[in-house]
Amino acid sequence: MPDIRVSSWNELQERLYEGSWQQDLRRFRSSYAFRGMPDVNDDLVTGLARLGGPFEQTEPHILRAFRKYARPEEAAGTSLWNWLALAQHHGLPTRLLDWTYSPYVALHFVVETMDTFDRDGVVWCVDYAKANALLPEVLKQVAARECAGVFTAEMLDEAARSLGDFDALGKDNPFVVFLEPPSLDARIVNQFALFSLMSSPTARLDHWLDQHPDLSHRLIVPKELKWEVRDKLDQANVTERVLFPGLDGLSRWLKRYYTPKT
Image 1 (cartoon, rainbow, N blue to C red):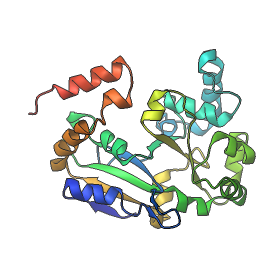
Image 2 (image 1 turned 90 degrees about the horizontal axis):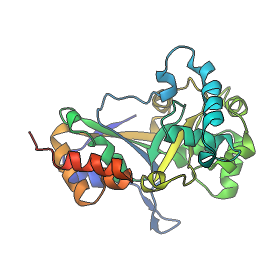
Image 3 (image 1 turned 60 degrees about the vertical axis):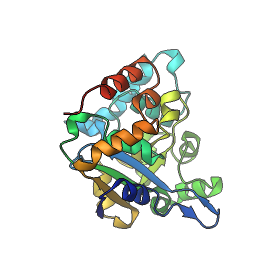
Image 4 (image 1 turned 180 degrees about the horizontal axis):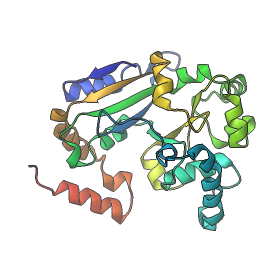
């Protein structure tokens, strides 16, 4: 997977939107998913894997408990995939990873906390349309019929209604799908969110991408550029106040905005 170290705000914009022109549509529509992280050394280990121990055995139990104890108004219907998205959204350790369609939202998470401004940040960029070429045939057919680059819970339900059924599809050839969650709340909508989902709880997306280097690249944001990125995102209204609607997000934004530069 190639790393591209940018040197300026203008180069960063060019790199983030590079390849977004779709000739058949005659529109600028990127097929990349973006994930911003404050430290270039951060990996793509899932929250589930960070639990440690036999986490692959823990997965069905922790998800079952979440579904049992969730309040009725927070229920996600009958689809396992909606429940998995809801759980990830509220901080439960799952095999999902958070991504966004928006390069600016990804940049926000590179420069969200000032205590990481002393190290380079990174934006992971994965072409989900190209990744779909490596899907098992049953998922390819669903995506082709729907003319979709990413999956909804209903689309995944057609091929697999349980984690066991889903994992069986990738037993011989692991794969990743990108799952677009339902509009559960304003935070998901404002963050233009989607999730990556590997075909095994023990699979690492970064390791899988290393085996398919044509699907992704990383943009390294130098620490010297972080203040400029932060200030320009604030000017563009890409802030905690917008991405985390409510008083908590407002307080986080004001605390950061009024903290003096040292």
